[in-house]
Image 1 (cartoon, rainbow, N blue to C red):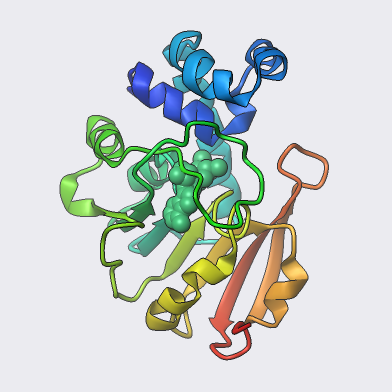
Image 2: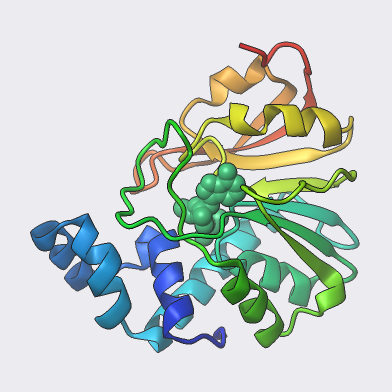
Length: 237
Ligand SMILES: C[S@@+](CC[C@H](N)C(=O)[O-])C[C@H]1O[C@@H](n2cnc3c(N)ncnc32)[C@H](O)[C@@H]1O
């Protein structure tokens, strides 16, 4: 089995980003002592970076295998929104040739991570310096990626083959936060892949919506959709 090189700070962020990586023992601690204690103590001091690295690799491998049955990743420009520590992007990069990733993330860690629907999109659990280090330390060449801070940077205005946002856009915060930006960058051929509990809503936003994964029975409780051809007007409120 493969693994990612990572240290304790990075392992902590991965644990906050991918809830299925939390072991039953740590989940019990979260239940007993609450989310503030979990975010600020358990995730810092009571974790095993090696085991988190192995489980994260396995989870990302499964995501890539699922996505590659629908998408060809050779020679693609990919916009990754809320990609966490980018394990998926690392695996795409090492398994397929000639990709470029623009990555949009947040650059702070909330004091209490709750994972619910975040009306104001305040919650975040990433550090861009650690993300940059993790990518390079795991073999991604600097010329194959760029990282943008959602709150501070001008977002890239380019065309993309794919926009990928797993368990982030419209899963934790409203798609509408990205609506104006999407108006600038999406073209007829761009495919947008994300997880949502309301796939029907997106039939008014895109010409084509295909459900590729149904997570109703798992902790994620959402559907993964691939959308094409943005109807620029109809997603205005
Ligand atoms: C549940 S994690 C999912 C991470 C990753 N996609 C995965 O599947 O492992 C959600 C991520 O979205 C990020 N995030 C929150 N709001 C964002 C925004 N407006 N733009 C980009 N990223 C955002 C968080 O910092 C966090 O890393």
